[in-house]
Length: 120
Image 1 (cartoon, helix red, strand yellow):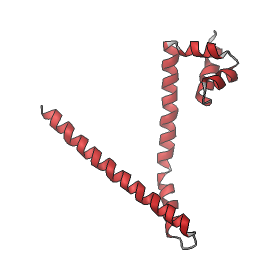
Image 2 (cartoon, rainbow, N blue to C red; image 1 turned 45 degrees about the horizontal axis):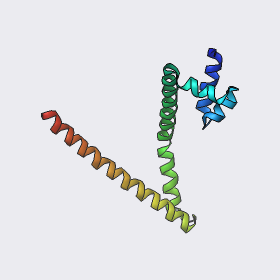
Image 3 (cartoon, rainbow, N blue to C red; image 1 turned 45 degrees about the vertical axis):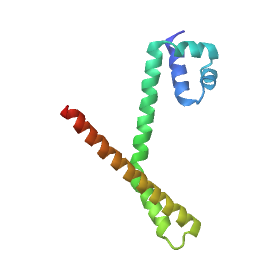
Image 4 (cartoon, one colour; image 1 turned 135 degrees about the horizontal axis):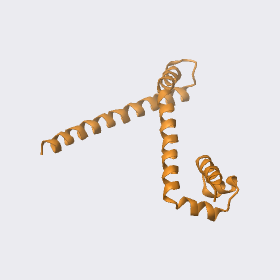
């Protein structure tokens, strides 16, 4: 199979949720798509590109955290907001804070364990 078809499959794999849909989009048999995915070089490139997409997506979402926090606080504190919405926003803020506290504690414990391991 030529490189153009492989590149079409790569793009389709990154776009569609299943190999079947990706193969159909790339206009190749599903069995061929599975065979190509077994190629070590292709599989590594696919893994690298997929990881890059996830990292870019995560980075974008992190960049929106402040805006999301402002919206939650606005919904939570605005007397014009329906009570159920204020409750949900408050619950979300409390859950987020609890998860952050857990993460901080876990990081502290990991740091402590790493310092113990480093001493040995």
